[in-house]
Image 1 (cartoon, rainbow, N blue to C red):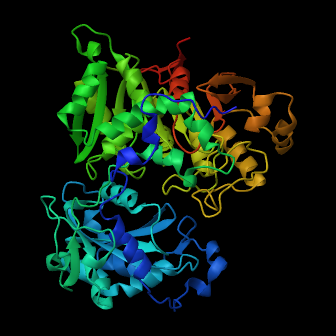
Image 2 (tube, rainbow, N blue to C red):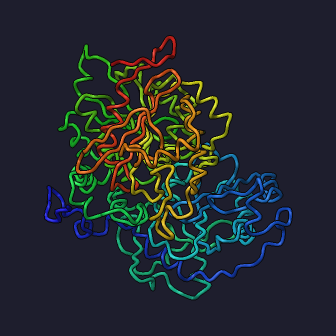
Image 3 (spheres, helix red, strand yellow):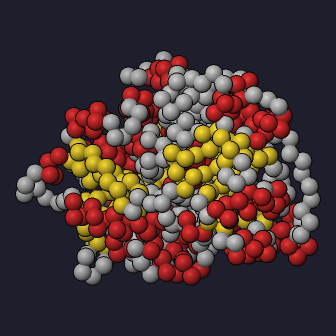
Length: 604
């Protein structure tokens, strides 16, 4: 039974009232207006690749499933010759594209001024991206001539009701050298429609000192050689939103089976509220009061920078005393960049339990991630710097990440297995899909065989009410929300795909193979955990923690060792709960990596 009268300290922060305007970007009304008013007409792309259109495009090598877009080779090559790259991605159902000089790729030191362009498109046509680039041909020629500008396109089908533009701007700022102090919004549509910016309902433009501007149109600049009317939105777009609170409360992150009231009135909700209250009270991670917050808990927060990218460490104060023993290092792949100064605070809240464990003396926590596997190779340099600055036991370094960051953690561990003693992926599919939703993390046979050659202890944990509905692996899945993040965006929607994906995972973990029939039979197993997980296991357990059941399945590898664990947690949507991080540490702390032989050691 759910007791809706169960309360705990700061419970009121689940309500919107105490947050005021913190949850919404100041720019939100303006981008909503742009998404509503743009009436761009769609025209048929005249140069289809190999003459293919519609679903037939899915057979093309230049087709990308996640964005349902074709990157025509002749277009790509043409702009390459002009020294221009373009990259298309998706978040929250919104497609976005960055175009800029190829010399800017991988350079986070030399920041470029950036023009943000809202443009209405029809995602159902795989040629929407090619059509958009053609529509903005003059803009691309402008940046090709100047070599000092980035274009960030938001290709929307309508208003951004989820406010995902903030997350997209944050990700784009990490991935590309966007100068947050020279960020402009294309306002051509206002002039085309003869509308004043001041007429946008609910929007107030503020100057650099935060004062309201009565006539925003007077602040428009002429951007670039085309003299595009643009509004300076530098540092005027970030919100102070709380990510895991959003994931608890919004339907986008869960299946229809999710009981939100049960979650809120539970010990899981109570434990999460500790971090959410911290998120509410502090705006920026470089605030001295924020460092004092952690100092009172007995942990030292330090901000570092490598190659223009920020990373954070939380070190137990006792470990800094002379003669103290070295401690394990937990790498938490979570965004802490400076594009949005509140981002680090909400990321620390997201994995608050990891910092609590650090404060208790279990390990040193290091927060860092960038937005693609290649960029995350910088972590090898960061680990060297960290070992020189803080007392790290290099035989006991572990890595964890949630959602796409879990995939990045997996990729980093796969490329650097001897650096790490274990891996925790949270909110990720238990199987390995043929094609990942995250660019750069495709799983092919070559990668699977290479991974199988390395012994990387892995614990994978997901909520059983995630929008992607991962469990039971071999079962029929119902309950996906129409139009939500999990709708049609799962790389293994069918039972047969998931079974093949599970067999790929077994090969990658060097575990004995299971037949399709054995996997299907798990659904009728007398063992409850086996039925709920939906794959055969060598041992199982059910733990009742923080008011919900945690179903655990352990699979032996070919050497007879339990180095692979799955955990499914009832009534949890797409977010990392405190119990996930506790169980991750409980599993990982058993392992160390022999620095001489590279072999995994079981400490107990």
